[in-house]
Length: 231
Ligand code: HEM
Image 1: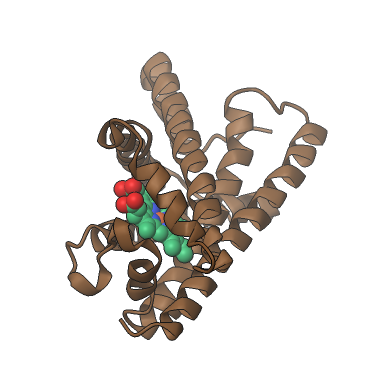
Image 2: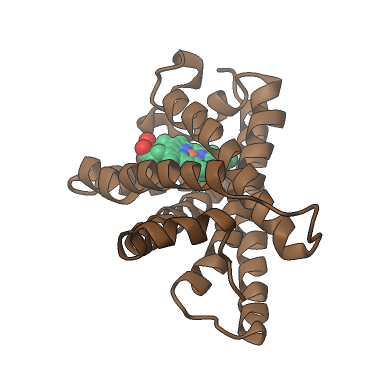
């Protein structure tokens, strides 16, 4: 089944080879960043294990922060992939033509939702990362030596953050990730037949459920922890 849009066809006519490489790089950077998010949400979910007798989340954060060349790891596996994926993804969103009205089939809705969730994630990541880095005020700043308490402070900084920004950001991220993994298998020629796409679809649906569960467990734990401590 082809994933091409009208503008894809036009662009491939302009410079098929270069376009092919840009498209593959877009898929690859999505897979790298997606892999990071799966690990990130699983690590965050360890917050449900609480702080007694040991603060398990703090232990995980300490392990990450003791990695050598962490800044280089972050730039290579997180920031550069996101930047390229966002810029090229934005271009696809602007030039693509979703045809939900003309062909109201499930795949077209997923195609449209992939782009809507992508736009939501851009705003979410800006808030999330700038906030955690302390660029949006002390209340939102993540302090790695007080990982659980400062994450709880960030999440509980306002009712909008805890019950608006985060639920929406987590749902959009998990959907975009799972649907993106499903499409990536087509991009790389791994799922050619309709049957293989359906089978891979079940795996991606399970990935969606797993990441969503981890995201909401982390969020719930942070909200709960915030209610337990005076910040
Ligand atoms: C309840 C859910 C989440 C929690 C509690 C959480 C927590 C955190 C924390 C504490 C950091 C700072 C890490 C550090 O400096 O060591 C961070 C960074 C980050 N998070 Fe999340 N996060 C959540 C969901 C998400 C989601 C859904 C995404 C997907 C877009 C995401 C993407 C990122 C990125 C890109 C970074 C920057 C990576 C870095 O600088 O290390 N997070 N998150």
